Image 1 (cartoon, rainbow, N blue to C red):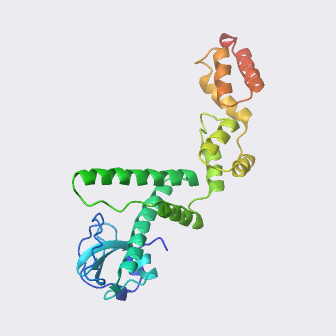
Image 2 (image 1 turned 180 degrees about the horizontal axis):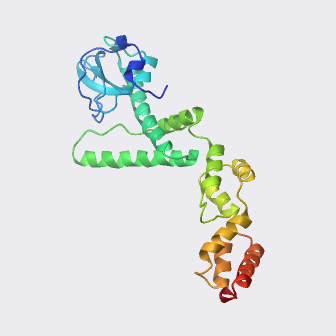
Image 3 (image 1 turned 30 degrees about the vertical axis):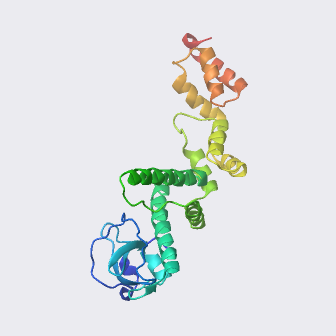
Length: 261
């Protein structure tokens, strides 16, 4: 599939019917009336022109993005049986979830694990919403399947929207630039974000940040807030080498005796 720019990118002959408003949040009925249904209209979405509302027997059924309409060869007049309907509805859920996840990924670089965790949160939120809808005797929205989550992640990787090496390089370059941060802390944080050790070490090896310079940054910001012993303990907790911390703090005290040990 493609990231869609506008409906005009594709042949007008694919579309039929009038341009009415969409209702993307409509629960999907699935009550086929007599085995097969007919696609009677394909209507451009009002809120999102990249989506197409599909009507079966004049009733809104689901929406697809434009590329899916072309890829799945969806056309007005086409007969849809139960098996085909299941495929189309699965594609609908995938397309919506992929687009929303892509928008989230593009806000800033994310690791693969972060993205999968984001999708799991959406999955849990959908379950909670459906529990509430059940209490209100409303039809549930389609659940987000584990298989759909993995397909979304796989597609984002294939299209280079997710790349743990690139993410690690970005993280090393931008994390606490003014405040300072140790390589040990960067390594631990990237590990928590699911980045493989070889990717982390490669990013640290190519990055321009070194512990001595980062230690000077932190020392300059924290020097007046702690006495020497507390300052040493704090900097060691931040991942800096103990001996290097002691040396740096002593040198700072010698430069300004009022801050000494």
